Structures are given as structure tokens and as C-alpha cells.
Length: 387
Image (cartoon, rainbow, N blue to C red):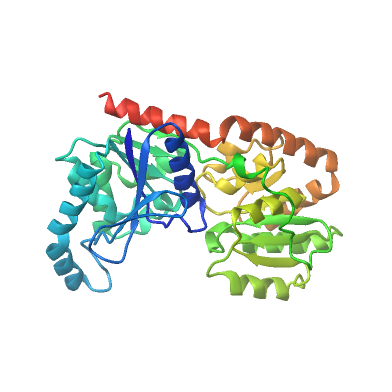
């Protein structure tokens, strides 16, 4: 099978979607399927390269018809380049003999593949990962119509959690989604043995630490974690917190930590490569994520794969991953007191912490290995091709 993965993120970006795309490429290639990826580019011409890992990457700017900052100019540019863009995509599909176009994280500009689907023989599979579904209500009517057109032409719509499928269905009540499937993201188990401890936590960490991994945006709820950490300190549980990730909220979060008297116990490590991340997972006491909205966060699967207990919020796809009291502890979002209680409980009860970690690891090995996830995608691809 010849597969084209389409994503709005570069393969080198830090984040769950890029990790998912890279992992799927690797698994598909292992099974003899020729796989390439299309990412956003700066020019209107199609550019092809083979990266340092041997992956075929195509890059091109897919101009949307609507630009809020310059409506008329954007429309004129779209009309001028629409035919050329479509022709170049059609040539790519034809030259690479693409059987399946698999869109990971559909944004409005991907509608070009819906147009091509009307006149081509490839199958179109669209996958929702998180914010691509959460943010639909904030999009302009034109952007929603473009994505609706894409979904109407899709041969299958998948998502990493049922809650995301429900959000998409609610955003397009008149649209019957085709051949829906749930396929979670996974954890890169092959990278865990390579975590040899050479990437130590920040030197200032002088005791047990809790780990947060994620983009520093409001949706991830790190501000709630900081409030919970302050409450835990007030009750004598003086944990350190290591924050692996970066983002626009970092300055405000650093000020919050300093204002709460936590500057010596909160360590912002910035974005980290996977080997360093897995060293941090393996060295932490437990993992915490207080998201306000999520799909199925890859970081939870990674923490569970490393045998670490997880404290997380009961939102969207997280309860589909974590069974409260068995493979993790779940609390309501925006409730720092409840989060602090859960953190204190795991801090003080090593037996519970280890038992939850073992059960979570068993779940991860069963549900979140990328070879099994790739198998589920390939089953969907074969099903839609057989129609």
C-alpha cells in the first residue's frame, strides 16, 4: 500500500501529533508499505526531500480561500493559485501511486484533498487528535464549511477518543460521518530502554519530583498544578515539580510559581528530546496532568509505559485511558484542592503509587504499543479500499 500522511506540523516539532505521525510512518514502513508525508511549506511549488531519518517529506503551501486579516486579498490569491495547487497535489498522488491519504489533525486548508477525492481513486481517512475538534466552535463559518466538505468526502473518520468524535458530530449535525473508528495514540516503547539516566533532571532538584510534560498553554492546566503544589507544600508535602515543555504561558507561569513561593521547587526545563523525556519519566515520583480539554494525551501513555502512576483530570479522552483508583487517580478539572489531595496521597503511599504504576504499565503494553495501533489503522485502510 502507498500511504500519504498529511499533517499541519513538521516532523521535528515537539508534540503528540508529530510523534504520532513519525511513529506511524515507522510502523507502516516496517510492514512494507511505502509511506510519505505532506507538511506545510512556504512556497506554492511542491518540494520533496528525504530527511536524515530516511523519511520522504513533501512540503507545499496550501492556500485557504479565507484569510480574516485580508479577506479580499486572500480570496484573490486563492483563486489565482487554486488550479496550480490542485494540479500539483494531483501530480503527487499520481506519481507516488497513493492508495490512501491519511489526514492527521484536519485544518481547513486540507479541503484540497476532498476536491481531489471526487476525481481520484485514493481513499481518504481523517483523524482527529484534540484541539482540531475542541476548537471547531471557534472557527469561522467558512472554515467550518471547508472542514465539513472534507468530512463529507472522507471514506473514514477516526479519532483518538469518543469524546472527540462526539464533538465533531455536534459541530456538523447534518453530516453523517462515514465509517467512524476509535484509534488511540501510543507510546514509543522502543525508546524506553534507551533512557539510561544520562539526562538528569535540573541540578536544582534536590528531592523527589513530580513531572509535567506538555505545551504551556491554558488548556493544559499547569496553573492548576502550581496551585495544587502550593496546597501540598502547606500540608508538609514539599515536592519538586519538573516542567518539560514550553509555550506562550511560560512567563506567566514562572511569575505564578515565584509569587506562590515555589521558585525553588518548580523547575522549567523547556522542550526536551525523547531520550531526555524518558529519563525524566523514569526518575519522577509520579506524573501529573491537569488539562481542561484533551484528546487522548500521548504523555499519559508514555508515563504509564514507564511504570509511573498518573494523576490527571476527568476530561474528554482521559477517563478512556485511566481507570480511577487502578491505573491512575482522576480529579475534576480546575480543582486544585482535589488535585493536591491526589498528589499528597501518591507522595505518602509508596505501595499505592507502585501498584498503580504496575497496572498502568500493563494497560500501556496492551493498548498503546505503536505496532498494534498501526495495525488498527491498516485495518481501516483495507476496509475502505475494499468497498
